[in-house]
Length: 513
Image (cartoon, rainbow, N blue to C red; front, side, top):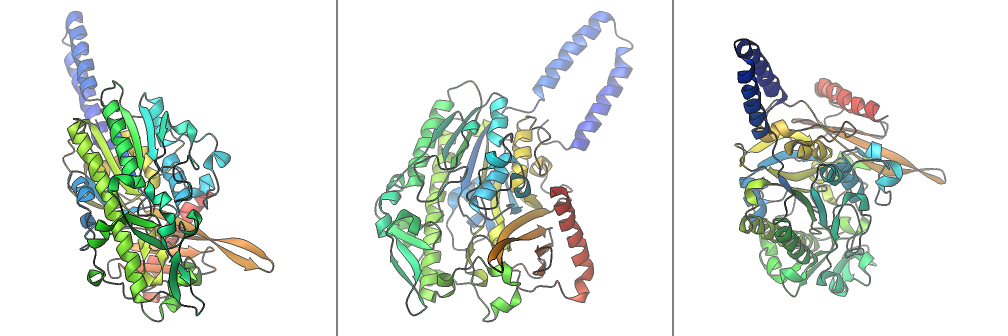
């Protein structure tokens, strides 16, 4: 039965066998036949339910949400989902970049298996026989469909196209496109001025904005933005799917808050800049960490003054709230269509995002802000809905977990760990840490060679090695230092913690090899 631990199932099986041995001995043949008819009906009644699944993915969203304790960001609809689902407070991506992360959680395979370490590698070229999450549902008789960005494609340059989609995953796809693509010439783009200070300029091309801090307080309504267009299309699809006999797996990928941070002006008004607090950054911040840990920073980001920092954060918050409003439209549609009681809703992002912590911005670090993600799973009738789970879980495990919740055998080829027991009981015993990695490059004479950073996160500790420790080691105690500002790796007092976490990390590497 969905939600039971494996131990619970074993105990129930033992009790049934004992009962059968004691009871059947005294039955005649007719009574035995009647007994087994009733037993089969009972087993059918308690089989895992074929829930619908609405899988909502946000792009570049960190944990700055109301339900995760942020006092500023307005996210009433994601908060509403959290109130009727299990909120995972320590969920982590496996690679803090769009394509590697999405390839990982959609295939249930780690980046060292997919070999996708950047935004160009298609996992079908490296693991052509991978069975993706929607393929598992499709094999089980589900109608599988996609609206928006699920697998990687460039934002905003490939909005409205298939990008790097996986056609084998879907029966039906919709690629929304809104006025934010057409308004690109109005977007302010961060750049480095001639004096070495940061400034902004108007965008000239779509590709000017995707990998750079950029923003626009836009004219028009939610429904005109790409995420609004996508939500409308998804609602129309839900209306049709609600009338079909087979269950559905519908993946809806929102584009915000990925750069450019575009949202209607009203959302910017929710966040006056004088009400936004900037993170405190020590003047000697660069000396506190191994050099590779900070290499995701761009020169123009390091050169921003406080006004530009506030404008960037304001725009990020505004586009987050725009995305949240579209989540609300989906939840309202489920209720209106009578789908709430038989639809699992899962919400998460592909990775986290820095907003000035350690003077870092965007993604591609393996600090907490970049590796950690919001994750909410709402299962109808789950008695632990509305609670939080502090156990460490990984996005790569979604493949095993969502299929298990629907009684589907995902096969043995996927990696990660089924955390269905934590959905049923957020306090259940759990001994699996979370692994994240990111690749850097280093110069070797005239050549550039890859340098891998790998990190393991337990409930208390984060431990990171760069180039197997040759280019830096980090240890952070989250009980005392949740901002990860004090590296304890070389402190003799924490030698045992280093050795323990190093063993966990090295075990993961040996399995990957």
